[in-house]
Length: 113
Length: 113
Image (cartoon, chains in turn brown, yellow):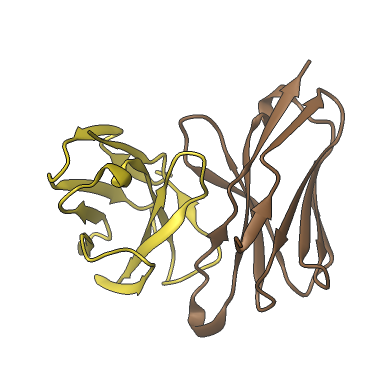
């Protein structure tokens, strides 16, 4: 199976909260990331969390990590149409100074008025 | 503050041909990583260059090669192109070798016919 799994689509109404979920298999993952990709653009690092943390909040973004279940989520409060994009979950270890992320297939977030 | 730039934006090649893609890292960065993103997939790591040497490599054949110049810019070369090489090629830069904080460029869309 894939190392990082995420659902492919999520549709929400503008102003609602969005929750994008991700599961990973590598128990040695040290860093977990959320990237955003808008059409025709590269990846933008939205936020990351260290594996020894449970939660990280940054303005409208909240990341929750359940290390026992290897489950990561990204909550976007007050979702706007500008949040429509593909969101990638990724994980990396730090052994040997690698930091090379393994990405999921991405969740396409559609925000409708 | 210049971000990561890549050229060309789009490229169409024929099977068996060779292609060279270029990347200039974010101002002040000295490490460049290349990723391949097939349609509907997350990016996959190809290799990373630091101090003009290939430091890490993903699971890609020797047809994929690269180079880093003294000004930290980088090239990705792909020989004997296959239809399956059609993808978005992303360059990411960071500072001081491998890092969990990478900045991605907009990518080069390669189509092999």
